[in-house]
Image (cartoon, rainbow, N blue to C red; front, side):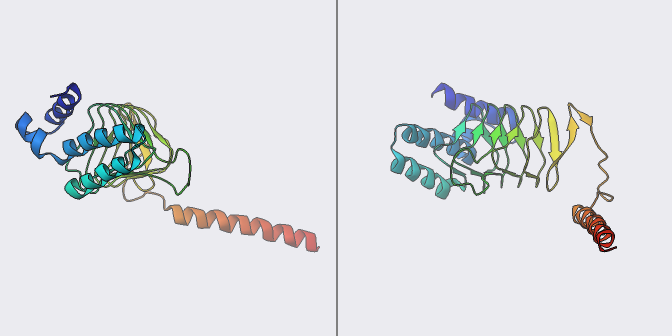
Length: 210
């Protein structure tokens, strides 16, 4: 067994309390299978065997429900827990010892060329159903809450929640009130801003008409 495969298994045993043996993890965990398939596909991609790389990737999707583009860059110790619905885009970069839960999307923004997918630092955790979109950076040790939609950079050692995601903790310290009832409505805030702007314009028109 290769050193990388041993690291994959060790990552699962360390972070999944339900994992009971190395054999179980190696043979039955879809996340481990997907990462292993990606390494083969990535090797083919780097050696310009593009059709074969894509074929390996798509076979993995059918077997595991996890789609990782062959060109994505993945570090050591990635743990994809459960994994169904995980999508990792072409220019995604993932550091070491990261954890992704089911339904996570590391996706693009619709750009046709260049860097268009996220970069995750080391020891990043992305919760179930979270969407991290665009060429943004998630710093080392950051945590993205389940269901969050991340559209901007997230600093290291921080926790981000919500839609769109906002940072609520940095270095374990709360940075804003987490009152879930009295959260400002962004639509109302924008309407108020537009009303104020319209009032300013109306005053200017009245002054010019005098």
